[in-house]
Image 1: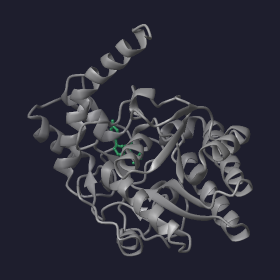
Image 2: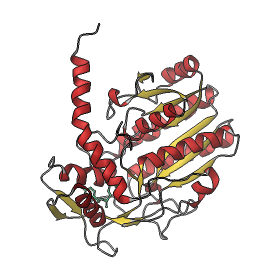
Image 3: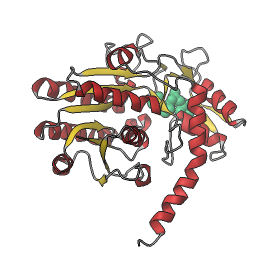
Length: 339
Ligand code: UDP
């Protein structure tokens, strides 16, 4: 019984691989390395470089490794990029997911865990948002994921395929044991940007909009520690293996922080001040989104362990400090002649 993790060399996928490997699961990673890193995949876990939407390749992996479950992380994830490049997002997120779901159905993979997003809710009318709230995305990113959800739902009705769709709120932080974290260059996500600014890697951070209808005028998000998020996936896998019905669940903590709250937390954790510049609103940003996470706790028995903004930013900072060492070690490994 092997779990196929698409996007397993990326930020969240690689944390998933660590979690599965720690639990003694057999894992194989499929990643095209467009944003991931081969060094992020732990030793002993096979890394196949390729596209999650390549049916021949996936069919081959299912046979070769005896894949019993797919965890599908591979995707493009930057909301403003999706506004600029919608068709690229529909291809990479929606079209590839369609092919992967079909491949699962045709090759008898019965368990599917899908990385979806709170962006499917758009600007929710009520906070916290429950899974039954209307889905009305305000970005192509959100639509690209919602379309994938719909395909999974319909395929699940028609075929012998069960799924758990996890709608992520704002994922941040890093492995508490410093084995991995968010490593891509040119990151756009708030905590990563703030941490890079705190460490002097950027001259300043911009706050995108201070005129939102929120207490301090900046957007409110529900930041969830990546280690708790991947634990929800393991819980989902156990849930599916026990033969229970498909589910769609929020993954957040149920409390929100503003952009200013996050910047203050990073300054505190890093013990430094840095330049903060007020800028205009960014396209595709909802004012406020916070999860009702009761369903994941009840259905999966999910128990978060790092529900604390200071812990999240402290782990993000620790990884950012570790990252140059990891990059140097990996380039030395590549440069070294093989024995
Ligand atoms: N944000 C910001 N400055 C940055 C990056 C993000 O003000 O450098 C804001 C962004 O406009 C949003 C919030 O932080 O209101 C969270 O954005 P992020 O990109 O981290 O996640 P998203 O909610 O878009 O998935």
